[in-house]
Length: 267
Length: 242
Ligand SMILES: Nc1ncnc2c1ncn2[C@@H]1O[C@H](COP(=O)(O)OP(=O)(O)OP(=O)(O)O)[C@@H](O)[C@H]1O
Ligand SMILES: [Mg+2]
Image 1: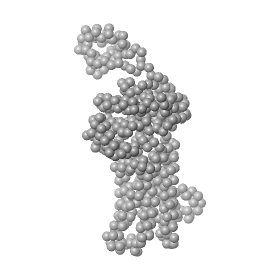
Image 2: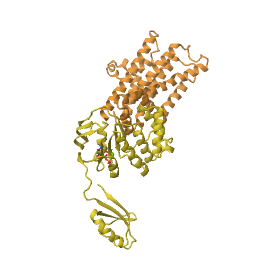
Image 3: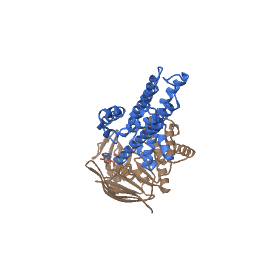
Image 4: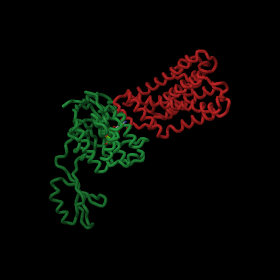
């Protein structure tokens, strides 16, 4: 494994608040790391520090060779161009030939169901569509490092799975991936290692030992709510440990409750 | 080099598709149209006025230029070109190109009038040296103005009200610096930071001795001031933001 980036005692303070506290870490080519954690814990900050977009208050980021970073931000901003023109210009900036860029843009916009919207001005695109333009600009040309900051925000399910496939493919080709995300589905689909940032320190993220499940139930209005059940829209929500599920759920079903959804809780 | 050109190309595209450029350009065209609406026009004074106009309008355009920048998009561009040098050079080249474009009006409008009137438009016969002076000093004044306006970038002075006042002050002081220094000589020690537009605008008045040398001198000086402003701004932005 070739080492490409070393974080050497990185500390980042904003005002009086320490967001990152002396983080040391070495990243190898082809690694795929994810950062998870609460809002404001420093996920975006660490991505920007790694790319040297933000200068750490103390410590150094060392690249062992020159690296090309491409970046999908949390909120991709529109510019006063059409999506196609923007992407063509980005291709040219990346040193792609015109025909090569045109071809890539056509392929990727088909993959992401975007062909018809390519010629609309970016300012008129919906949030999810705009985010797709952000995704395409980042994978137009293969970078050395891909920074993904909640890359899927607002995208439809089909585009999400296309995106996951593309990122996995790039990673097999040796692209190093950093991901900041809340959706654990995405974290599991993309990253080999996940970290949480807690009190400014990196900790290996361990999924819960005994998972909990969130169950959505529908009643006919006459059943008495069992303890711990809360209303959620037109349904009722129940949070159960794995071991409880098999015993309690059949009982509820026999009382006339209907299961409308079940989801593993992963935080 | 290719990346610098591509980046400045991109910047100009985005700029001219936005509404930021409209007002400065309209003001320039209207002002020039009025200036050259009645015959006969004095070459010397219209030359001086055009220099000041281009300087001031480009300062305005350079000042408003970054208001359309989005931090995140700038970060994407910065990473894409891989180098701060290319990134900031690309922006400066875009500014210079916009300056050249704007100063084109300063030559085009009187040029058209001159052609329409069969060469009988100015108070004296126009000479090649007049065209040469315009070709050299109009773009130079525009560029110096644009760079001066861009100097107080939001990253340099986040307080925009203060920045706009300072920019206006700098522009005015540059324009009246000659008479001011003659009245109060010690101001010379402060005013060297401002570009010599006043001198360039009046290069024509009075003696015609060594005109080509003085023209190139002013051109070089204004260009250099512009470059230095761009470098200073880029360095401050680079160290403050990143
Ligand atoms: N430019 C800035 N100036 C001041 N404080 C900042 C700045 N950028 C980030 N912060 C602070 O640093 C902390 C970490 O921010 P960051 O954006 O990294 O969080 P995050 O983990 O990405 O959160 P989210 O899940 O909401 O995206 C926050 O408390 C934020 O307020
Ligand atoms: Mg974030």
